[in-house]
Amino acid sequence: METAINLLFIVLVIWFAYTRFGRVKGLRTLKEADFRSKLETAPEAMLIDVREPNEFKSGAIPGALNIPLSQLGQRIDEIPKERELLLYCRSGMRSKTAARMLGRGGYSHISHLRGGISVWSGRISR
Image (cartoon, rainbow, N blue to C red; front, side, top):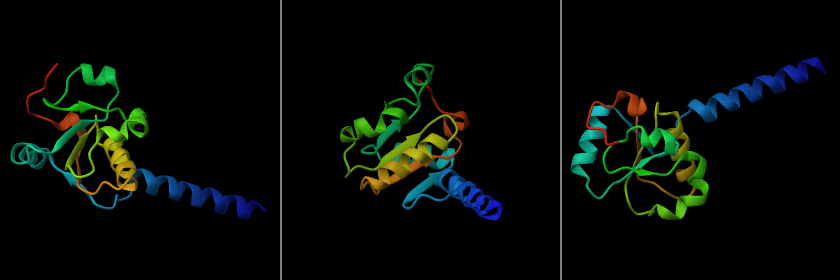
């Protein structure tokens, strides 16, 4: 019995690690310079900040729409499926989670900023 519980625990830890840190199908992870370049060369792309509103108010990449990860499920209709999506958060974890949710919803052109806004050296709007 104890062996079965230990095995179940190990499986759960592996599953949790994979869902948090594993690859997301179709997601492009961009370095800061590549993300900036994509913003400049793809003006039709939709820039989405998935941080909470109080974080967004403290400073955001100009032109970003704030759709917090906590509200993404309820606000997904605001995001057109045919547009390219550029996501970011504070560190890159929430934007990756958002990308996973969007991918399950049929979105296919998704990129996110590796390291989040914490690595952004461009202009910030407040």
